[in-house]
Figure 1: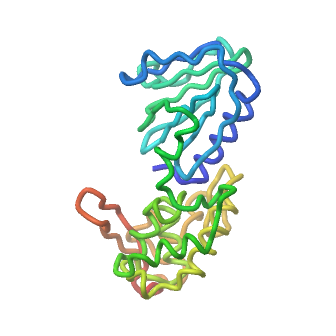
Figure 2: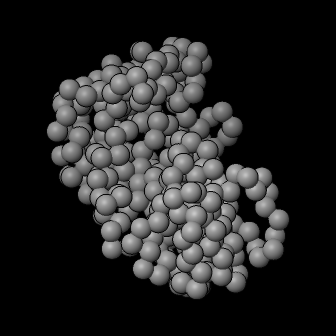
Length: 258
């Protein structure tokens, strides 16, 4: 699933291409909103909120979530798409650009005045203007028995972290992903999360190690069986989540993390 920095960059790309223009085409290919036509409406702005993209058009907001496979791509007017048309869930075009949302996990249209109905439950956005470190710490601390990795992935606590960042955060902080929230240094963990994702928000290649060479960008994420970059112990993998439906693969070093 894309991390918050990926969503942030896609929102900025869409804003740069569409904002200030008016839609000349609006094709939403999901049954619930297939009859919605925002053609003629001005595109005010495109912003990210955690892992959501909000396209404010006229008095409406087109809300999307990439989930696992989703992606927004930009094309010049008349340019052939480089992905199959049957994967397109949304086509929004101005005179100068067309934005195509492929395999979007979520696509909705709602009045802009009611955006809070859809995203108001989210915690402070790590890359947003509302970032509030103290509020994120407060929300995390409300469930002291939850494993720290599960709590950090919960978008209701803080918005924008995905599995890769959570795995890497736990390693850098020396915490097993299963450590209860009550035993974690939440202020330091949240501050590191903000620094880590902010450092990557404008990078094409995400890195948590400081290196961008292939195979050197992460400490533990997807490195099961490979030697820990610090101590040489083979990296372990386990499944972790609130319940069987939310299980995520989690990577860690059993020596460096405790």
